[in-house]
Length: 203
Image (cartoon, rainbow, N blue to C red):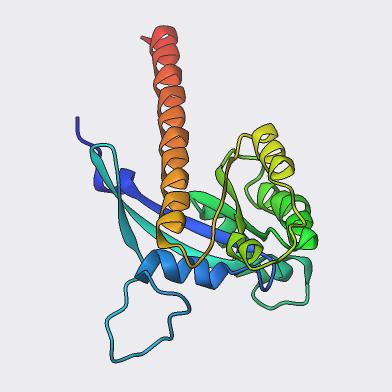
């Protein structure tokens, strides 16, 4: 049976500290360009299709600064919390040359997501950005093994990218889509199992 349209539509929040490259990451995924400047005279799409096996998914990404979640004075905090609660997947983005960005997104931001979702499981991919800076003499502050271990312990995907590399960015979102699909298939199995038990009791 082919999946319904809604089963292959997903909203993804790209969450991270200011300056880690959230907008660049999102722009590269949507347009294949770095730092897209909005022009009202040009057509713009807020989603992109991605193939996954025999399916084609529509992905709607939104970038969100995790610094906002730490400031209760922000007037749009409630809106951001709703985005996190309703998202199908969360990309936790950090800068491989900035330990603080990793610490904030894996501690405060990750726990904020869990709180917003009431403890419900969610598809998540940890993404280390700016690996291109390392090639230019930049110093790595977040070890790949450290990040990979953190992600593995929490059932998250992990990858390192450069926002200048379109294929790497698309690959990271492809990993996210795979996890969203797994999450939905798991929920479907739970519902079918529960339905079978109820029929056994009341049938």
